[in-house]
Amino acid sequence: MRLNLDTLERLGWRFGLQTTEALLSELGNPHRNLRVVHVAGTNGKGSTSAFMASILKACGYKTGLYTSPHLCDIRERFRVNGTWISERDFDRITRRVLSACAKIKKQLGHLPTEFEALTAIAFCWFQEQKVDWLVLEVGLGGRLDATNAVPLPELALITPIGLEHQEILGKSLAKIATEKAGILKSGGLAATFQYKQEALQAIERIAREKGVGLWVGGRDFKHRLAGNQFHWEGPGFNQTFRLSGLPAFQITNASLAVAGIRMLVSRDLSAPVKTIQKGLAAMHWPGRMEVLQNKSLVLLDGAHNPDAAEALSFALKREYPGQKMVLLNGFLRDKDYAQCAKIMAPHTALAVVTAAPSDRAEEPLNIVRAWERAGVRALWVKDWKQALVVSRGLASAAKNPLLIMGSLYLGGECRQALIGSKGLRKI
Image (cartoon, rainbow, N blue to C red; front, top):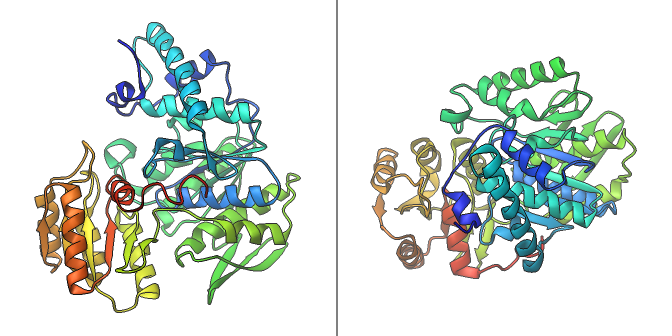
């Protein structure tokens, strides 16, 4: 059988580092000797990673960024100084990694998963590019995630944790937080911002056990909203920053990134205030309160769980007060779409439900019933392409904005249909 990434994708997730480490060893251990910022969490880890990468770039460092999932093109996951990997480099390194995957099957009796292979591609490319820094977003969990093959990151960041992937990570916040805190390693530095004490206590326990220097948001560093700016205060540093065109909920992610930068300054990172501001202002992260179309407003947000829906609701109240929207949505089976519907109900004139383009998509009729229980009129359109046409038409006729949410799988396909790869090749 000739291997390709689609072949690996059907194998799904495998947790544990044995396969990843064997694959990386076969490739010459490209993950070693990289200066890594490792980012885990439930919500905001992609945005926090993007803030970190943008600030490091502004400081003059050649910066790699590895994130997942992608919106429209798999190459979005691999960036150096904001620009995604070339098709030539991606194809060349993929062939090399797939060849190594075939050897791993002979060694271990199974193939690496798609995510393990993609992570290996990332390490190979970033090593080739000789990046000064690599900002590495965890795929799922932390302790057993393929990205956790890195020996000792310079810094670990953990964004707010909520209930997700409970069948894999555990049924409680404490168990999920413990899995995500698995990226903490002895001798490293870390910062976190948590809304829930159960999650914070688990992270603090792991940090103590491993001797990790941990800054906690609200205790060791603080931020507050000040108009279109935010004020950050921490050890030896007190500054006001602005974000350019980003929703207010991004301030938590920006604040955590600033904390990370300040911790790295203690290890000889050069980051003057003006470059931190430049990096924050330059950050652009598609798929989060993104305006796809101004005339007959179309918004896209990747909110797919209750915590993200709360953040989206907060942003809508601030940016579009009193406006009701047509809400095109589809969720995966493991998401709490019923609670999302309750949270989003005050903003929703009509919910158009479709199946997210994933083999893990929830049955749309179940989502329709959740909207109806939340007091929102809902209709089901089987095919997402037709659902996009229908929802745009209904929004236009009612002079309501259209909001696409519930799944980045759905959001990415809709974005591609509406504006293609605009704004994605370089962020």
